[in-house]
Image 1 (cartoon, helix red, strand yellow):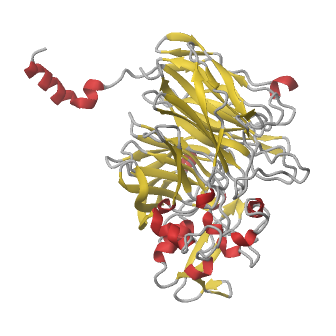
Image 2: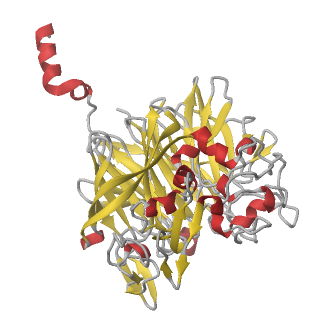
Length: 582
């Protein structure tokens, strides 16, 4: 081709058009729903996929389960602030598997990232217990694409320089090959007592602090951790305090490597966006909260979205509010009443105080002079409500992005409570809207839904509409969700350059939680993995091309003790696939 023609082709198609990959056509052989008791306690996965008309044999293989030992470490064993292993009251190892602790601490292994650095494949694992934990090990890949843990490589990652970890839930592999994690369900600092106690859930963190809750500040928890791997396999760990504090389910980085969407898991919560000052550097940026402006209440609802700026900060600025003397053992940081004043009388707000409704309920607050930045970053959800953002979402969960169609997908496990119109489960109840904005006014749907969001050229979401909602059914006296539809969607993952959206469940409305493939073009819903009873499908994530092979990573969290994993949480992969990376 002559130079003049090359120039014309590039001018007409653009660089992206010239280099665009062939769109993947992907279909899976569905898995039959279990009928027998033995089937219900086993993990069952699709064994065949068709990719661009080529049939491939696939399967699910487990990589590691909690309690396994390697290199002198125990996978999922929790440790205290001195990095000393913890034990349960009966003297057994304190494993974060979601089933072994009869006193009830945490859910088990959650997100796992597969990261490549200097020719080595690493697996970073985070654990969803009040005493949070991270482990890293290396993986080996055989000639057929099979993945296996490399013996002698398991390591515990200390978080003691950043006050320890807390309830690490979902995560993602960033475009720059780091692990971006989360800290979910942070305690309500307003409820802290003199001895440090807040509630039964949070107080398990005392194990990390040697039994002394007074050493812990609730503002230590509720952040976004990031782990990067160096040339020699060393781990750089940090918490991004400039990304705001709330119940982080997932922080999802967009293709510009600056914009991050963050879901908030709970009742009467927000939806947040962070724009970093520099690409691939989340240590400084601007924090925003979404405002839902409803267009329709039909089929899960739709709305336009606007974004309210909450503040700009650097990680070190916010961290200084938690630890002024730079000694993690002294607990000299801010408290709730250093930031806010309350003003409620006879059930109404006094003049000068703002009425809000968040997970903490109806409150009347005023920010103390000079404490706006502290309010924005330490009490992000409350401050967002005070600034007019929407804090009515219910259980914000997974986020993923289809770059080819410029669609962001966001799952809400339930459409209820604050998302209803002065109601709870379809019955009149003002608790969740009293004092709030009542932006969202939708019919109750216990099965939840996945929403599609359009984004503009700067990756800012401008609208939100339900793409797929579950189908409630009555099963005798009990509420359920139709077996052939989704139930309480949790984390989701989009296969790049395809029409394939993967949806994992965390539900009691299906006897066995299911991992679905949803075809955005045809609207077909196919079950591809059915988990053992009691297990939650957490953090599915696509790795399209690891040395020519692709994988869907998935964690089986807290399966029933009768399951084949005997109650241990485990991580595995569906695959290997060929051709996902084109």
